[in-house]
Image 1: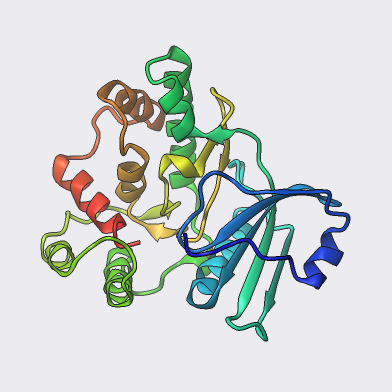
Image 2: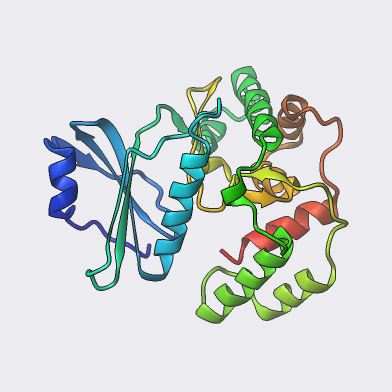
Length: 260
């Protein structure tokens, strides 16, 4: 874990006061530290990022603002602030705490239940809705393709010692690429611990720092990681596909993901 709990800055405390309870989720991401709190704004999730990871928090705020009017179960940005005088510079993003549990946890508890298969179909439908959205101009990556940008960032992460990939794996990703497809709006980190559910419905898609105009197969590969064949089928049925990714496509995008 890269981050530890620290007291909220005075300006944040004043904006949220009274703060009556604070807790932490069981899982933390690499780029930020999250706390849950009961505040004047209700039950919120407060995400903190520092130094080189502050850019990811800014990106998440931009994506959440762009998705504000969508029908997707996405948290809104209630409050965002940065302290550039801190060493290192620190940012804080406050969002409503969405209901539900991570779909990954529910999947482990009731792997073969009909309810979970229904939840996976609903998840597939939600991802299809995401991929059908028009990409806001502020999230368009410009002239560089999404994959080129990702490979460049993987190179930078490798140099910084981030992620679990190595030089040989990165060179393989650069030279053996899947055929291009039409880009769509993607989540970019769609592992099941970033998907919330009440057991049937999808109640939240969280952690949007990698939202972009990108390759939808990346979302699909991450979303289906660890699912059984029956679970794959339920998810793909909801998404609207009769056939999933090829083995090469699945392995390629999962290998790309380990550089984060």
